[in-house]
Image (cartoon, rainbow, N blue to C red):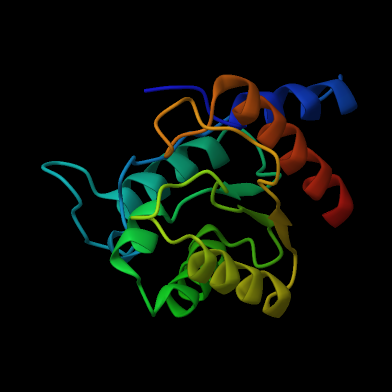
Length: 176
């Protein structure tokens, strides 16, 4: 549906390590609340965000090693005013790391856009995310300050998504 930060992150990772191949394992499920990022949960017909992610990640592990997980999610949780977001994010991080056998895998979370409309109060989700990042090891947090929407007050513009990818890469470098 649009541009995300992963491509820029991957390009910068490749530039920093030109002798090392870089692959991306996209697993985003637009509009999904964090509550469906659990084993066995279905979001929409045929979409199982967590289970599909694990399947793709295991296939990728057969070809190489993971450098990091980039996490940018929460608009639907902001709209629902999910009070359990911190607990659910913490559980997801620990579950993914355990299931992949990578307890120290860097996990970098992005802040929700400052441009979100009033029906998406991002403050509590961003605060919950920052709390989990501060609590768990090998976590990073990426600011969305100064980034713009593509005009819908929900999704990042292409230029802002690229800048977000650059910020994810800087956070990754700081962790490694």
